Every structure is written in C-alpha cells, then in structure tokens.
Length: 69
Image (tube, rainbow, N blue to C red; front, top):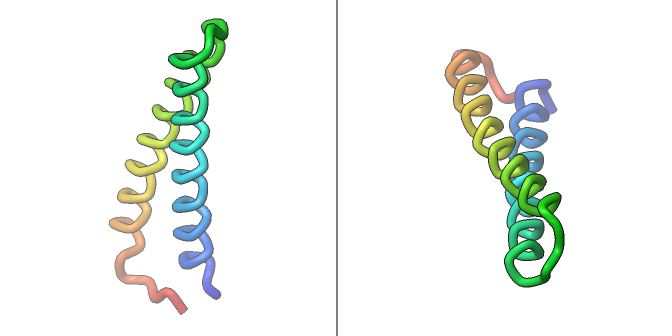
C-alpha cells in the first residue's frame, strides 16, 4: 500500500469520526440538559470534518499524477 492510498484511507476515517462525534455531541446537547460543552465540541467536530474534506480534495488534486500502488 502506498503512502497516498494510506493517506486517503486515514483522511476518510478521520472525516467519518469527526462527523460521527459531532453528531453524537449535538444530539446529546439537544436531547439532554447538558452544558454548553457538548454544543462547542459538536460544532468544533463538524468544523473539523469540513476542514478534512477540503484538505482531502486539495490532497487528491495535488497528487493526481501519483499512482495508488
């Protein structure tokens, strides 16, 4: 497995984890009477997920001529 393929898998997993944690935290904020920390963490995680998507597109565009093998 090349470094490019590993990087794509790692960015995809990180993006899914960020959105998953963000959704879990925001659901916890809206359903339970928890503090603002759940809202802050949820919004920060969703923002990180969006930033990871932007970074992934940049990475794929930058290394489009390099093989996955």
